[in-house]
Image (cartoon, rainbow, N blue to C red):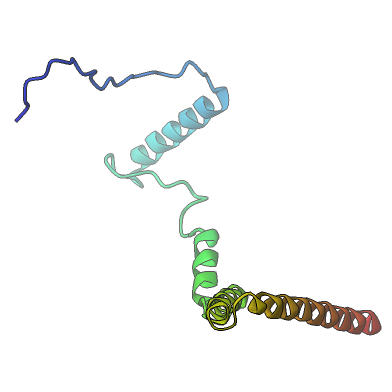
Amino acid sequence: MKLPSIVKLGKYHRFNITPRHYDPIKEEIEERTNAIRRQLEEEGVLQPGQDFDPGYRSGHRSAIRGAFRARSRAKKSSLLDNSGILRILIFLILLGGLGGYMYLGNEVLYYILYLAIGGGMWIALKRLKTKGRRNKNE
């Protein structure tokens, strides 16, 4: 039930715009398919109300759809993948920093800084080590 209003509200307007683009290739394809459809209907291969299925579509399914499904089934997201480990690590650092700040005060910030520098150095050395292995194998 609509309540009376002082303000006149605008109404929804639907526009029906017909494009003015002429595509001669599309027109020719449609003429050919209609001619083939009429010919098949005259020969009795195709019923008058039946949909026409061109030869390039018959019996084939999209390979793209199957590829996406296969990939989604193959890779299940795990809690311990790279992004999951990073989230857990950040959460633990924040939780430890909060608890350490309550227990030790400002001194815990230095401990976190030392841990961050040590972790950065460990990651850099690990990358250098794997890069050295790759160069020896090549």
